[in-house]
Image (cartoon, rainbow, N blue to C red):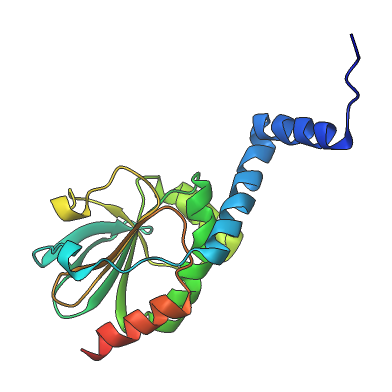
Amino acid sequence: MKKRKFKISDIIFAVFILLLLIPQTRTPIQVAVNTLKVAVWSPSVEDEENQSEVTPFQYTVIDLQGETQSISVGKGKVTFISYWATWCPPCIAELPGIQELYNEYADQVNFILLTQESPERVQRFINKRGYELPIYIPQMRAPEALQENSIPTNYVIDANGRIIIKETGAADWNSTKVRELLNGLIEK
């Protein structure tokens, strides 16, 4: 019987698997892989016949300082809603694009980034990474059209409550396609 010789690719593969098993290295590797996906994956606009609607409502949330707020959704202003978490590699990978989009459209679009984590943990996370995003903890159950069990899940909702984009998984939110869509929705 012939002995199998180890190749350098076998060693690299074994090291990669080992790194995935170590908690301290797993998340950075997963974020890096998802960042590659974000670089090529732009969110898709729902076909008109598949677009659902939410009845305009007030989203009751608590900000990271503990203040209760009520944010309008589907009431005359475009809304971007993101369900995410600090421990979620795809969420971490897409946050830089969301930050860039927020920097450009904060005055024209309602941004609502929702997490179920403690405000202290979220504050440490955003401070460490230098984000300045409107992050909230929901205080109500979302309407049925906005309920999804996967994170990240992001929605772009027009001023009348139509869900124009529903994207589950990491995506490039700072793409030309998304910016053109927002510009068109804001002009309406």
